[in-house]
Length: 419
Image (cartoon, rainbow, N blue to C red):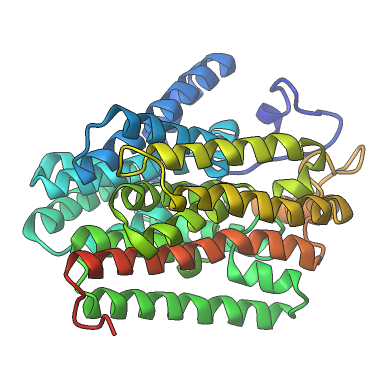
């Protein structure tokens, strides 16, 4: 991989800075087609696909709420393009954005009983399997079950064609190795990596991550049953719980939360709307960026205010209400804490922080090289400030989950467990 990567413009070929990606073998036809293009052309094609996915995510989110308001469309698009997760996904070329859009389209197809469309969207979402597992919460009717089964069959066939019978085991092994390489690095937004930043030993941090995962799954199931969440709301809650339930979650992966945020921006009322607005401020701002790029703090704040404006456009009424002020106030208040905190505790950025002339260990595989690069760049250091900044989006997911449940209970007329 490295002899190819080092020839790319802006890569420092005088040192090793291998960037490995791990994906299922079923994705090889797509990536293989891109790999056969000249690199600058492939970048343009992939960027167009990512922007199309961003638009598809916005359109599908609105269609799920059955709204055609121009202001809502403008708000949904602005919410995405001003959010840290979506801008990170586009800038870094991350397939998470494609997967998020496909999840939204799969939900829309299943809501309308479109078996083929749901299967195709589910198959596309599986380009990033750790996000797609949230669709398990939607498997409550024959259309969804049949669509998922069809998608799984095609996925398995593509995987076998791309990597042979042992491909699945090889993928699982590589996922484990790559996950171990990134368990505690600063770019991970998992409970385990945050616990590590606050000083927990490795075993304790991993245990904390496992406990959070089990608790997230249990709470999601119990809340879905007791609050009688319908298939759509149950899936929205599963998406909100996802960062706690999987052992691998980056800033750009929070792009999946744009779906529940957009839906609630249009549906939530009263206290649930206040909560979802606060959640938008916590999730959609790249708070770690205040430490990683303190010189860009003004830009980060401006993007945050832009997404707050998007929240107003997404409002259900014809005029702004006091609740629409929540993201403005939350972002301003949190920025007053995050800006000085980031300047006092600057975080390294890969590959900029790699030592000049860095060389990876000889004969190491890609995961081991990546782990060594993170250590050499200082991204495995412990700093509670970095942990606190990364904890904000997770806190936002908890708040958003409460808003999902409260919105459904309100629409159900109080529900069986409203007390």
